[in-house]
Image (cartoon, rainbow, N blue to C red):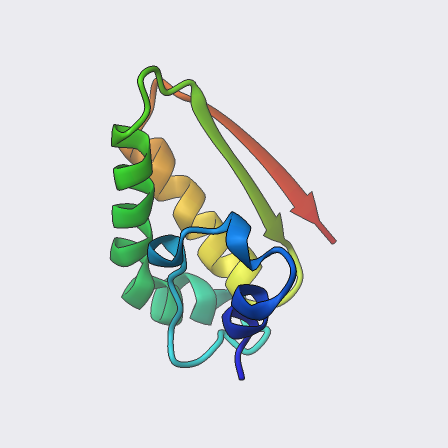
Length: 101
């Protein structure tokens, strides 16, 4: 049972669109480089597609909020990859990041 399965089945599972939940087969194992260059690189296109779909459904897109963990590999490595890709694709939009230690 993975983290997303627990979220889906939990009390707050109804808050999330099932089509917006993207998961890989393994985590980054507390390794920033693995989250940024390996595992994250394999998932970033699917994650950006979800974000792009949500952005396109907005009448007036103001910006993005990203909450990421700085510990571990997925939150820190893939989180920084995601932020850089969003900045690249939407350079004129606000980017608010919230880092958790």
